[in-house]
Length: 171
Image (cartoon, rainbow, N blue to C red):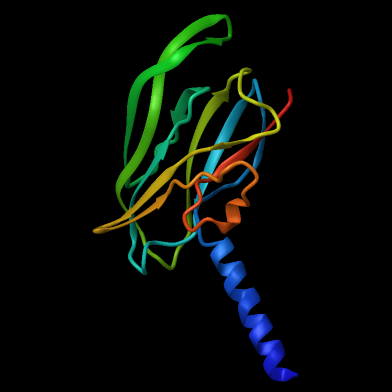
């Protein structure tokens, strides 16, 4: 009986630790057509090494993106053309931030931190679906790519390196 309990508890603990081991978004729901404050939670480094860079890709339909600077980290954005023009409070917008990178800092493996940006979730995004923000975490020469997006109907927790996602809600 004790051995069965120990094995079951160990399997549960392993399952819980792998489910919590990836970069996630603090708020997992957001309204389409509204501003969203994205807080990327980084719970650990890579293979015991300190995180030295975090890069996030901004998906199509997310505009007017503004990252929050972090003391001790260099902040860069990559801008580009959107697939189409979007309305931003009555003004057409056809280009903007496509990627954000924080680098040059050091987040030890034993510590936790957050990387923040805000953006507009355009009205054309599909309510009821999950929008994914692929993230690359660098720890010196080790890299974790949190970029896997589940296939339709697939549980994202079954992925080894799932991209953080936010479920889109109706306005």
